[in-house]
Image (tube, rainbow, N blue to C red; front, side, top):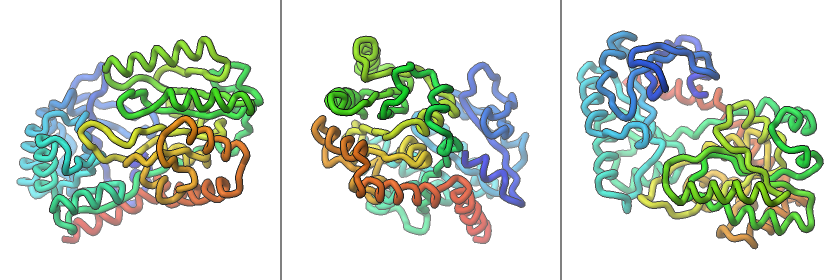
Amino acid sequence: MLLNSLARVPGMRISVLGGDAPGLELGARYRDLYSDIEVLHCFTNGNVSYLPKCLAEVGEPSILHIQHEYGIFTDTEALLSFIKWVSSLEVKIVLTLHTVVHALGKTRDLMAQRLLVNNSRAVIVHSVLQEQELFMQGFPEERVYRIPHGTLINPYINTPKSKLLDNLPLPEAAEGKSIVALVGFIRAKDKDYLSVVKAVEALSRKYDVMLVVAGSTQGEEVETTLIELELERLAREKSYIFFLQGFLDRFTLLKLLAASDVVVIPEVVREEGRPIGISGVFHLAIGSKKPVICTRSHKLVECNLIAPELTLHNLTVDMLVKKLSEVLERSGHVRKAVERLWNYAKETSWDRVAEKHYEFYSELLER
């Protein structure tokens, strides 16, 4: 989404070195499904040894911007070696840290973070928590930049709900119901699905409501598999829940969000390893102009700051029932909170975030 907006900025020439494209050999070119931007397939399973060949093919850039996530670049030592080599060519290295490791995290992760940041010309983070954490760990202020995560403004927000439902793989029973959406990758370790199910079950006694859980599992933990099996069972046995299983293409996901009445993001506050990230689902939800029930997870700090009325003090069934009831009753303070979130969605639209990146690149090149 960022590339799609950056590509429209006059005077920018972008080459994309991508990874983990199933079925493609290293060095192959392909078109990104959504943006139609050409991508050169350059790394897979954390192996970055082919990247120098890719860089030679596209030509030496002024800036090499790495979108870093530990699950993608699993071999930090190899990535660091590549970064040092590129820096020797006098190319400026920019690193976006999608996950910042907390000072109480694992020692090896902290060491990896320190090496990556210290060998980059500049580091971009998305949230104030990530920024302050890097400062507290002693990283210099002049190296750290905060640019918010972008928001896709949902093209279906003005489409009638009935028309959206006709184009979604939902049961006929969804027609006329208030839809509570729980979307995104299914991960048992950092999301509490069953509390949401129980809350909607309680609400179904008073409101005509349906919970739609949509997404595919991420990771192979036994707990995640058990949650998926439990969701399957509940969807078979209960009329108030529907499980839209599997990876949703972007257009189906956007239609579902546009058709929903409220989105719940049941992130747990604590996670193993203490990573600090940001929620992409949150941005998709506010870009759909929807109320979002949030927790006080680090990933949802933007929600906590902008819409405390929609933030759970702690994630319990009773708290969820109370907040969801306020949304379904269309309380005045909920409408005001949604309006603030919508204004934030427009402020962080991908076009505006691309402009911020372009301004940042220009400033970096002048040094």
